[in-house]
Length: 123
Image (cartoon, rainbow, N blue to C red):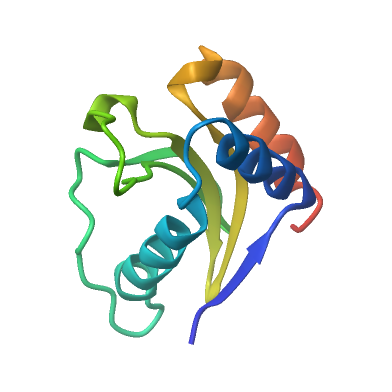
């Protein structure tokens, strides 16, 4: 069974996104957790997330940092407007590190660096 952890920083980012535009974002996290259970199963991984939606950012011998488009339901957002979610996989542990919305006009490189800095809190 995969263990899911949430960095303190992402908890604040989720709350801010929830207030602004996506009140049901926590339900969308439940969906992504179910997909990750299958995609990153350490014993029997199966591809259930489309390669165009999942992007490997960086890896080493211990962990892999990923970015995914978080599908959000019950909104009028187009898929290219969905929030991006950075997370790290290490064995049977997945840590959600940060999230950014198109509303924030975020910089990919800055978010990659933020995710890497938050990753160091765990591994």
